[in-house]
Image 1 (tube, rainbow, N blue to C red):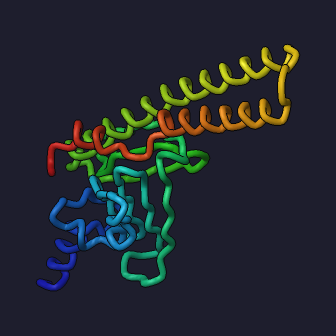
Image 2 (cartoon, one colour; image 1 turned 180 degrees about the horizontal axis):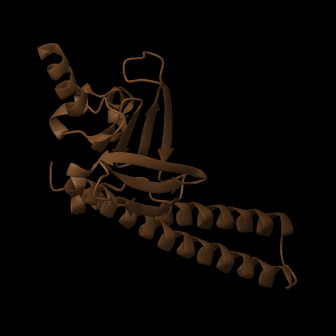
Length: 208
């Protein structure tokens, strides 16, 4: 009897049931996903949702999904989705009904759709995650528009130049134009393809 009770307590605390649990900061080092954080490169965990079969580790660089048939199984599939490479869209919360035990957090990264069931008693923590993801999604959308504006401006400038007669050493002119284009695109990527979203996490994460 006592063993069963303790087992249920441990299951609830560490998210070993089918319904995900938002893990406390002090327990981040106990989750499998912590082993795959690139600490050497400044990556940091801000939120972890853990269920019997999955871990969703939200970092300043993106999402690490540790996928397995059960939390006790050693074989795990680790997938990384960095915000710099994957567009975060369709961030939704589906609240629980009277008889429901869980809330659903839904979002899309690139073409990958996620739907995570979370204990409805953890709505406060879920709101922090929701606000964070929503803000990152908005920033990404804004930056994509600015990036495309920069690319369009460069294309128009090149088109205008191509209609003019090139004077001087054509090889030298083309080399300079190519380097200019490369520098322009690199500057656009550096400005608008953001990797680190620590500022957004710190804005909404009240538990450090």
